[in-house]
Length: 301
Image (cartoon, rainbow, N blue to C red; front, side, top):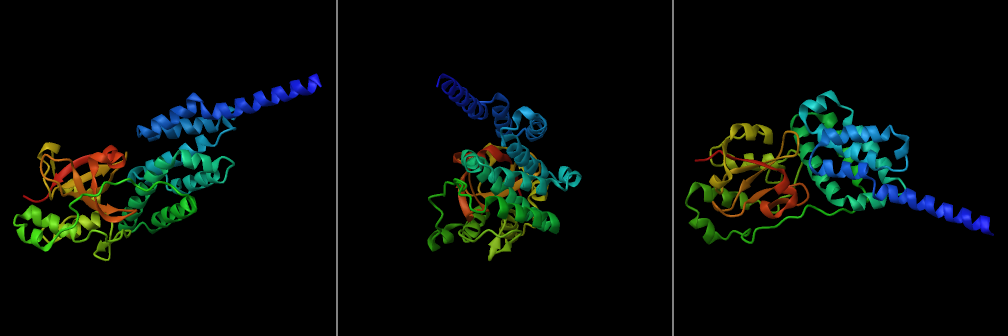
């Protein structure tokens, strides 16, 4: 009886050690911290080293972080040209994690990361489609479908402007160019998000800004990256409604919107959200957008 009790005690210690190692392992925690800080190359390298270390065979966390860092790195056009296999490698890794014994718990614990990743990948897919990279676009589509199917994650948290509804009387009082741009943009509130869309039947981010500004004689390039290059860079304190706002996530420009708030106020933009279509978002109140805010640009006087 005493020997059985000793064996049972040793087994409990072993189980506890295994679960505790995964929950409180400094090297695994380091991956999460570096990823949150957007050090994607470091995450990728460190995750690979852990995958080569038999001591970490107990955990799929290195596989998870290798996969998500791969997807962030691949959004850099130059890096992706050197690693065209990155999307499928990441998809296979995330599916391995998803289908593992702890897959549901891991996806739940990282729901914010995954929600933001889904937003990033949807924007990237639009860019690939505009670039006529049909293979890359198809690969991202397949990844989104395979990895996120059946997974409930929090959608992007947005703060919609209280003044999103524009009345006829407000439109009549919009006499200056910048106010007219905002009025024109807000006519499209609720329009669905469409990959590479550039018409009132559906927009992506840069398709929306180029469509709205075209009405006012401003011919914007089709890609957010090129719109950023064209725009005159301005400081935050100079931002007015009608200016462009650009976002970046470690690679090239990933998103663009139109500022609708007054000069000196909290930044509110109207833009094409991949999850909700054309909406207005308070950038300062959104963790997702405030972390990715890169610059402001002016294309109208």
